[in-house]
Image (tube, rainbow, N blue to C red):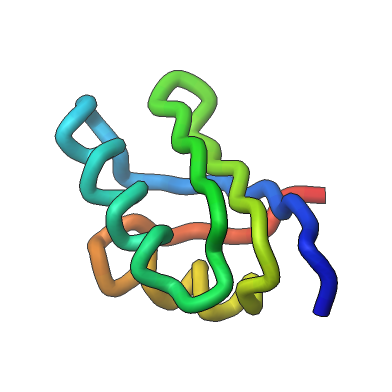
Length: 70
């Protein structure tokens, strides 16, 4: 897989602590090279070669349901 950016809709975040926890969860996924999480937009942009489903699973385990965005 190549290096690409994938956008996610991330639900359940209510504060900057949530953003930090979600970002930590994303960065724990093998293949993630960069993660940006936005509380206001309820979104995340993830760069790297990680499988999107692995990112979704990591966020769900952290308590933040997520789906990929077009």
